[in-house]
Image 1 (tube, one colour):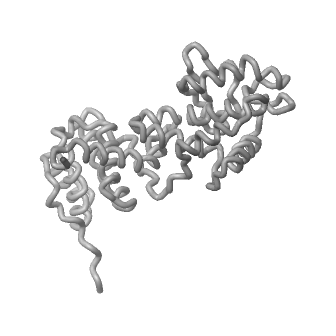
Image 2 (tube, one colour):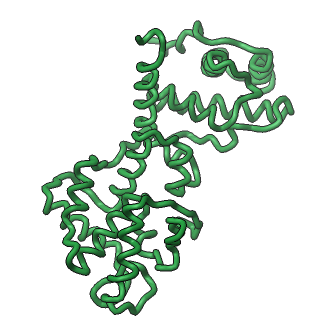
Length: 307
């Protein structure tokens, strides 16, 4: 009968007294099998090697350290199954150290398995975004409304539900900030760039009243009522067809494009998490391939051995 594959060689791993104590705990108190212990030894020893490379110790680890580690391992090609196992090992290890008062905090407390099997949805290129925005007829109230909505979707990464619930007073024109009511009625404040501000200022000042509002929504239909999700989806599909975009896009495509372009431009994953209103970083980690690509490019550009 063929034997299961052995775990990767721990030759690139290191140990520590805290790791040895945890492994003894797993052996004596948890009664784990030898092969399982080998997996823990490798997973956690590799993480300790990562810390050693950075000149850090277990006492220095925080959530950002763990996030950077995840991104690095993804960049090295770690598959979903291996990543899930690695994160499980880290959660167990830091939970033990915290429970035993060997560390003052548990940096892995909120660390969940990233949804690594999810594919990144369709993302628009900068050229495609420009084409969509340019397709709106700014001489008409509908065209100006549509351009303002598309600018805002791309500038703030809004969910369609957040866009349709937006009210005029949710926008602060002095600060260039939009108050967004996300999932679970959670409020967040999102900055928007100058172009989006200009369109939103002009729309609210000069165009919205032409819809004869009967509801407090910022964006209205011909009857003066707030737009529906389906209406916005149809608007986007109409402009996509006009400019020859054949990929399947929706209002949410603008949200994914917003996040992807921010990361490609140098934003960190934690900032994007806050801007998107993700309660859990694992929801934002569908974009880590962008972060990993940028890290690899920086490494190639600046590492002495890459010159």
